[in-house]
Image: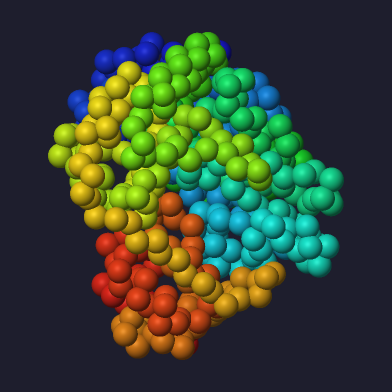
Length: 415
């Protein structure tokens, strides 16, 4: 794949800068602004448009666009573009879609995956929004025969790399009308680098939404990195993932019995590059031991450790293996935590006009104005409209350091 953005930047390296950003190239001379040679992300005809079309060809889609504000911005763009339609949110989805529903006053329903078919018949949604690859590497594919005429939107933030290897599960780009990718999670891209793929019928709606939501000063550092990463993986991805696969197989073969790898179940596939290790220990206590050896993973959640393996870190799997096999057997055991929420199987997501902030200790019996989740993974445990129970309040207190939607022990409730 050609790299027109990077090539243009390289041709003008070292130019005298009297323009934004204020460091004038001293911080990083890839960090420029919209100049005569660099194009404009928000213009349909520019050098960046040529780059976006090359990306679309790599991913096998009709249209692709760069997003430098992260996948959350891409989610909001999609919600803004389709705000006049009824949404069905399927299963665990990132908190960004719930905030977008509230912000754009979208009529939306929530349903667990196992009730999706019934919900489609009852709600007749115009948009079905689901997570294609979840935080633990589980890859879900929806049955096209059951979707009716709904627009299918896949949040595949954790799966931007899937198209580059036959060893990984298939990407949602093969099925969905709109797909959100976050290459910074699994590819050599700075934090915030995202992609939005879509069929041409949505071109006008999405371009207008991007012009209203996306920063008018997109990071050229991120734009160029996105372009280079996609070009690199389109050329070398097959070999990269063969090497990663072999390294992970060796890792698995030598892992001691204290840890078990969580892989696919009957309802989904599993991306082997997402190592999820389960044990009898508290994951946070294992993480603490590893961090003392300067090894940092993606997350520790209850009894699970999450590691993202890429072409740039798989050679360190031996070090991780040795550290895990050296974990002492007297670490604290894991306490499993869960919340049972009393809500309808097909739940209308409530959009309330008025709210107030109160202390968590006063929340019992009150209605939550917004979603509450543990981050990571950022999928809501409490939805707008859920009633605060003693169980919810105690859970929030226990996880207060990693809870989103609660600030300084205060929550937002319906006024």
